[in-house]
Length: 509
Image (cartoon, rainbow, N blue to C red):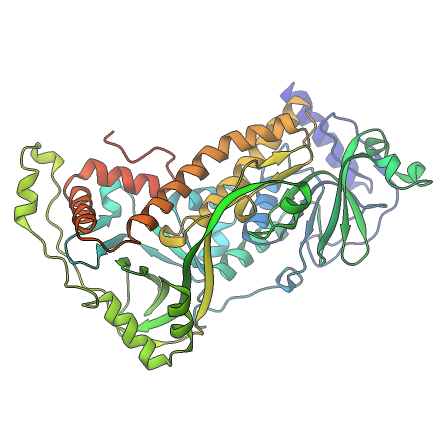
């Protein structure tokens, strides 16, 4: 069956090159569209046809990193690369070329990409564009407690990897994904507009009276979604994918319920400079929330500092010199002393075999910040999870489906995981001749991603709550936890693997 399908797709591709374009129906019925127009700028090849009445197989609402990654993933899979895709987003960054110069000051909006995500981005052909721009790998990480009672150091060598992760500016990731998408023969159309309303589960013939004769037969007798855009245009799609962020319009219109809460915390982010190059990811848990110092390449680092709303407002208004002093104070002796490497603590685990006891890696002091080199930005933090990711004709991904606390930098990795999982499920559906908008198919995607996303959200929420209380006995328990991880390599390796994208829990295995 697969060979016959591939052969048919190849025949359709040859017909398209001769001047006719076919829209993919997973039931293997193709309908010729005679009305063609020129589609420029979005593609390496400029003579792309658009569709009379604007019908698409997939409408992606949200052209951010996750939405474009999903489109790239569809373009990279043989069974989905023939789908027609609309990308709906009013963000100006989709309308032109974005170039990031290596000598520019790094943007404060960054993502920490795990090795698993890097591998997936390589598979779709996007990572090579990141490599041509700015990025910073880090091979070690140090996490410690403000009380001075415990710390843990992680090294890529603990799990036989070259790096624990890579810090990449969001604009570099986004431009790299766009370059990847434009360097394919994938048929996609961008709509610089906003989704205003959506009609689900309606036959196309009933949507516009008197116009059914102009509609392809593929849509005239089936159910589909109709999208109404802010510029007054409408389009139809077999599947609508909500990749439009935490305040998702798709999620709202499709009636998905959510569970979650707002943290009484904001994140202050910015770019800072050191006198020397930083190669380590640093994170210290303070009474009001964690502060992270992440390498950006050269002498630059990114600050992600979690604190209360009032404190965040004060720090945003603080002048540059005082802010730098506050950062160094919080990363050094502020709130408590440096943790001490203790042979006595190691002796507590002496009953274990020697190969299960880690060597004593000394605590290191982070590099001192010398200058603030970007604006300070503040974002409120929350946890949100959609109770369902899919209904008929609609699927959610990324922040539209879940938002998590940023203390481990896992948010965008979860979103990329969603994008690659959904494209794989759609491919499997096409191979079996299943309607790509059928809820039974989309539930497979939900089942694949929901458990992993909930688990990560729960782990991060647990960390946030554990460090939100300054209480003597709890402080001791946290210190013990740091030492357990520091001195028992199997547990440390498990934590690193889990944080790197492995779906297994960090257990002794």
